[in-house]
Image 1 (cartoon, rainbow, N blue to C red):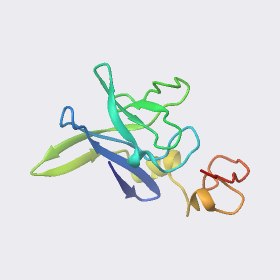
Image 2: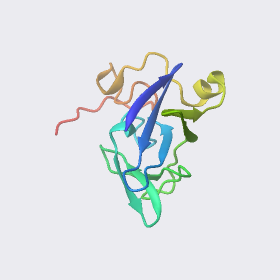
Image 3: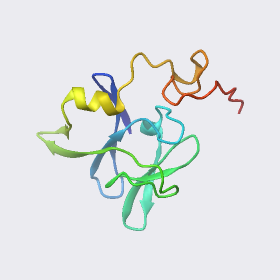
Image 4: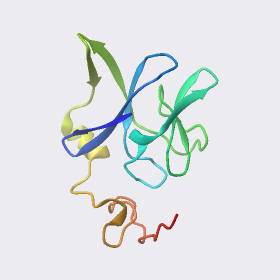
Length: 129
């Protein structure tokens, strides 16, 4: 996958190797609000294409955004089509997109006092692998 920035919002764009179909979702994993889904692992859940967060492996349907491994966590997904060799995303207006998914100057995992760029209100976590 790849990350795409639209206004203040990061999106993930994927092409399934199994079907050749393109998918788009928010880049932020709903579990810890980290901008990592573009680096997620693609696969299938039966006949449903899915992405797994590369950090905690929570899985989500690329067709509906519904959480597979944790049904309480869902993604925003967007329609995608291809035309003339280009991948086109059908998105809401940027002000709507930013209202629900945008971030002002995210500091990421290493920002002061936060493990998720200030989006989830948690104390900073010392991630030691």
